[in-house]
View 1 (tube, rainbow, N blue to C red):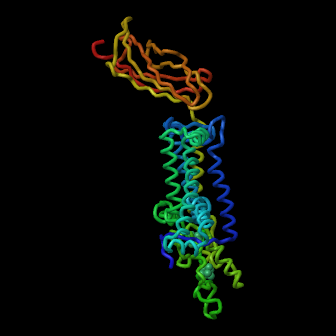
View 2: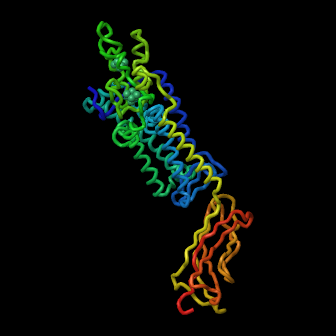
View 3: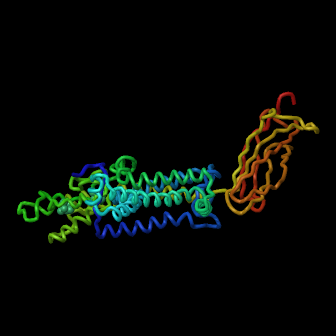
Length: 445
Ligand code: SF4
Ligand code: SF4
């Protein structure tokens, strides 16, 4: 008997959609495992450097001040998903989601060790004995090895992967690194070995709201009620095409019966399509009793590809891409922070009777190579900017914090004195950042 949300024991099923999924699984898992090993301009191509608070992405380095880029990337990824979902239902879940693909790899190991569906169910419900213990031990040991490898790979997106593997293999990894890898290992074991489809059914937010993106023209896995019902045995003259063999239910990784209609648990993997097609071929009936189709088509209409919702999503996506490209084009590879330092009083008097204010300045060189940065001030009549070294060398993709002084004659000061500290790339005057701040006269001067 099948129960929704119970542990699933999907039966192995071959077919054209299974082949397609194998191809996407191999390609996407290869991308997942290989990507952190690819260098771009001498640096890991994708690296979220948490201690350094930087994101390295395809040769660009994004700083915390530039989270709008990350935000736009995430929003465009979300809208792309909405667009695809409105056209093809949960195709992402069935063919591209890491949860589905990696769970499949774990299920494949389970099948190789414990056997196909019925043997696995028998082993699960049977009493503990040597065979059960050794099979479970072997399965969890292999899963653990896979999870450690996944843990290292996931951690490799956050910490340089070459050093990570080297330290891990040589036993010189820092406890904090081990903790990080351990966390991802535990998550992999839990999500792909233990939870599998139950993650999609109970924890994935996308599964919950994807229904809002469907309409009657969305193409997804559907059972053709008109052709299939009433179901019955092959030789039953009153039965329609469904012979009630339940193979579609047995192959389902989500433990559902597609003949009950579209359900939020369905990940559109089409295992039931392959299964039913194989049955239809055996009983000499046309394939496609379960197939990718739309509600409109099942009701005798034509599926409309060009319609409001996908058009709206594509317009939103184009707008975001235009904004993103514009921001990237206008991006200045120099950042400047200025904070007035009033720790020991807001102002002091120098030996030549000028008033001095102190400022903490942080200059960021967002990209390679090193940058010579000239500091100057604008808008404070007759004032002098005193900098320990000017121009300053800011190393590639790094920052430097210094203390500077602004000296001004009391007679030239107004009641309120606003001015700018300006940082300029000495080799390219167009690369410039200015921060407005205030000069305080101080009491008694
Ligand atoms: S596999 Fe096809 S024929 Fe068998 S129960 Fe499912 S829908 Fe009916
Ligand atoms: S009902 Fe079919 S398409 Fe949906 S999850 Fe189950 S096997 Fe995959």
